[in-house]
Length: 206
Length: 416
Image (cartoon, rainbow over all chains, first blue to last red):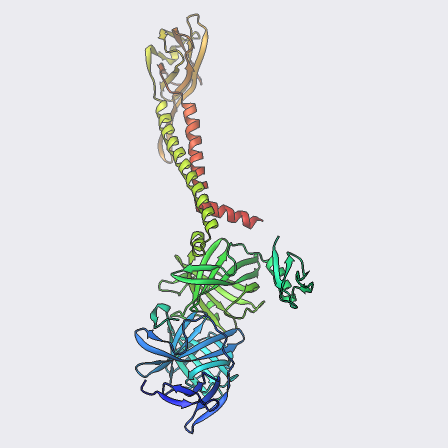
């Protein structure tokens, strides 16, 4: 891994693997403390409760191929909202790019962040069934929810403090899926595609 | 008797509760053990919404090469002007996180999974669709089969989401051939599902329900034997009806057994023909009369007599011939034939006496002739058996067709 660096957990001193330049946060696999990676160094960011296992085909450290592209699972984040939980898995691809897989109701969606070039609707504006122009795409709102970060493990691409509220607006852009993620840090935009299970090949299956 | 075991909170031993019982004592330490309020409520709800399928929580199923476990069951309830409508939904989860819904609705099964449509439709657009309209879902569109609002009336087991009771969810079902679509919406989300219709055998095979499959097999064997019997009846009826049609022309003329009269010249004594020697004892004979006339009507009778002029049988007919013009043009109708059947009991010489009487006062004349045929077929029994076998055949074919049996069962269910 080109970007692989080893840092040490400020709480227990164990080595913390950082395997992608986008990684902003690592949960220590030994003591469970999460550590924020900043320009100044490492900041302890609290301790996540251990994630209750849900049926899934992924695991931290798992590698495989997705539509022919080799990937490695770096981290996982779990969101909680009124009607349950869902998981997102952070992947690094061997071409240096990154993405995440959302697993919800058995559906798997591979997404990547896109820079917002047009103003996005506010969370309250986004009514289910309404249509907005986001980055030139016709964004059809299919879901809005108020969630919070329930837990995380491994390496993450953003600062995920336990309990941090995140509002989501999910939409359909011509058969693809798009997200608007509202946090105190701003609005993030992502576009994804549904992935069929047979398009994922896992190495050394658990 | 259903028995439920609970763990004793004091010693960890087993306390057994019989069905309906709410409290028992631990068999090890005597500690009273009570069912919790939640369990009681779940039991009441489960009694109110009994499972109409042989599927049970915890069952394993194989579908499209993947193994699943049935973890949850929900009963959906729709109340509208037509009444209350219930259906069941089962949640199946695979160890790799894949999810499958199985719906059981009015005896029909369907599987479904979430999907992302190319043309998303929301509550605003869906307002314009109703039952029977075409909706842009899938490559070829689909026909809307149902639309309404439901809420979850009962849920048991585990779900990968939080079941919100009593929340009204809008839904629209549509289908194209075997492909099935469903859209569900609330204020906060619109979700798209697609799947296909499954028959009972596929579902039972999925869960490896051998007893149910055996029952299905034997039911299908019964249906097949009904169809087979119906087919045999139909074939027999066709044969009999062909023979029946042929029977009117069957037999051959007995020696000297024909004669003709001029209708206006038949006196009150009639005209006697014979002797006709008949020998075919116990065989069916047919005495036929045929008229030939234009624009007139006669009553014609032929009587079979023995040598002592004793009347035995008669064939008679009110014969007529009419024609004219109406808006459709020229028409010509007539009724000029009659016959009677008898079985010969005694060989000997017989005679036929012909009578005729003009029906009106005026009109032209004509002729009538008789013929006596032996070795004839008696058509009445053939006809009765032929038509009975026809009805029986169709009846058994219908009773042996699975779709008819299904619709009869459904109408019986909707009656009660």
